[in-house]
Image (cartoon, rainbow, N blue to C red; front, side):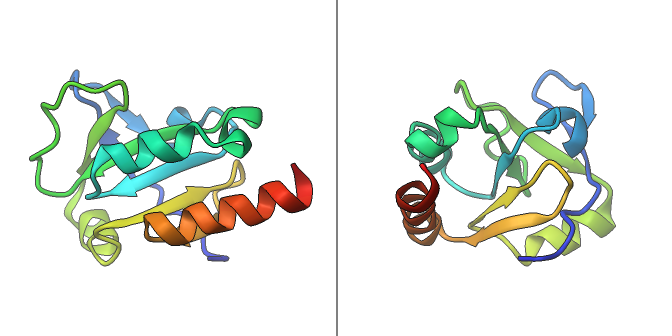
Length: 123
């Protein structure tokens, strides 16, 4: 947390390259790195995510999820340097703020707990 999310270019499932900024469109974006997309789906129905209209994206580090049929976009990273950087976060979720800084980082349970605490405080 407190770091800027890498300025990654991602290849979407339809082959379109997009930056994380284009995906977020000035909203918070929940990024799952090598995670089960069900985790993202579960977190995105949380009242906090719904109220603030968070965006979501799953990043596949090995391409295995790229062909999955889901309403959550699964993208691949363009560039080995960024792939190496993000591989340290395999299995983690990161919430990137509209200014590009990471607001939350952790596994599914810790992110869900943080979201609950924020909702209780600021809901």
